[in-house]
Length: 225
Image (cartoon, rainbow, N blue to C red):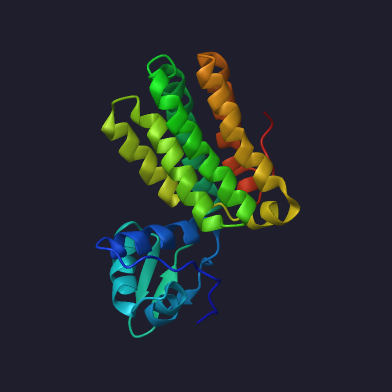
């Protein structure tokens, strides 16, 4: 059993289980909850400022996603993802996301651009405050919102599933050396290209952006742009 990192308390709302599940998922993806380590519901509940029950329920949801494995009377072990699997996840995302966002550039309404800018800024704000869980959640919302303009909910669901399986264990070093804020600002660069209605350049930047997932963000060697 390992000590847990600091996890932000969540509000007591009707969707408490969902909020805890999303926060735990983000903590797993970012590496704040470490692969191979068993965490107990009471310990995590204390971090969140809630009882163990909604944490246990949220963890059971994550069992179905393959992110954790239950250990009776102990807690839940964070699953490990092989380097080969991470390569394959990134390869599939590269096949889907850049061309989808490219094709969406022409159909995003002008009145939606300000909202998308706000979502991009949420990512920057989380990076600047050192909130890795918030960073993962804001990044998730921004990218799935962009993909939503494809009007293909099956595609969005597939990408959401791929993103849930990704591990970004290199985020903590990026946070400490200041590069995470620069990476976060890339979302505003993407918005600049979308606002300029430049689909080719948008696709190119998306490819570079996803390359970071398998490069610096995952703690490996960054792909060349």
